[in-house]
Length: 413
Ligand code: AMP
Ligand code: MG
Image (cartoon, rainbow, N blue to C red):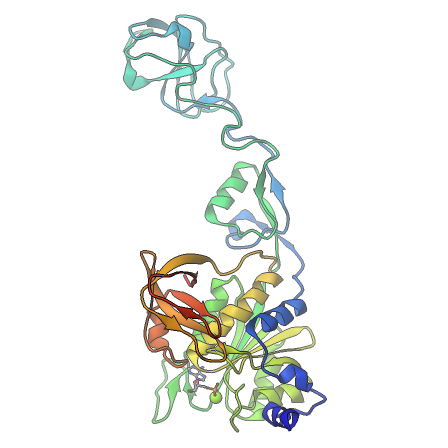
């Protein structure tokens, strides 16, 4: 009896959708099954200028120490600290600007005029800032006591040769690019780039910019998914709208599966107009997951047509948002060779929150100065509330959290 019900709810022939696979599964199990299906894309070499936000495909170690040679941290005079007490008079024997090393040597009672970043003359062990000396012709008188090491940047004090500078799977940030450039790298090997197709389904949808009539709404999921894809480094190659009929869905899906992944929004629930599963079946898709114990987002679907992974997200915008972050994003990151999750941070809860439902609940909220407060209506259509939130709090089934408690929240931006 129970399996009959499941089969009925499943609305797919048993051959295409084994009962066990169509049963509602946990969020963790869904993610595990999805990630098992994902193979990282082949790595590629990109020039540094194009490497921002890519993920390194290998461990990279420093080829040069930083700094690469002892140099001056100031404009001033290179001296031997021992011969340089307050009141000392020193003879200026030459000048060393930043650039080629002139190989000058400084002796006792001598100084070399030097500039920031210039190599330290031989025997010099300190720099006196130009503000701390009085120059008269070829002599200076020193107005401060000088210690060995003053304003000298020692070779390798920042980074040693051979030290790990970028780990495989690590995101390449602006400062990482600068570090790689400082090591002489002109290009870097990174994970592949994921291309995605997006199909938003629904007879009620109108493209923003168009005119809406009674009962119609603007398609916000296409824009949302395009932005979320960009945010995690993937590119939406085709974004199409499909009416709620099988032929139009089939055509849109066929166009989308030329990409690594296809995201379909809407039409994956149980209503008569939710035809995505049937259209997928007609295209010989393998459906691995349909329905996950997550709120919002229960009707989530996952499968594949040949090499293209298919993610069916519920049409409600908050459900699409949450399921993208919990299921699609990890898959994309794995394809791109990344080793990270959504960043989490501890926060103090401002009110009591309980999950007495049967699905793990992602509560949208605002993280401000270490405090998390749920915002807006916690319903799957409530897009405004979502737009006001910057963090998600996961509450497990049966979990009761008290105001003042420290919880971990996922940061959205
Ligand atoms: P569905 O998953 O197709 O049953 O849709 C669930 C809800 O989400 C309905 O209220 C739809 O109107 C809404 N919806 C579906 N697709 C979109 C979209 N692309 N943009 C905004 N709302 C949508
Ligand atoms: Mg629909």
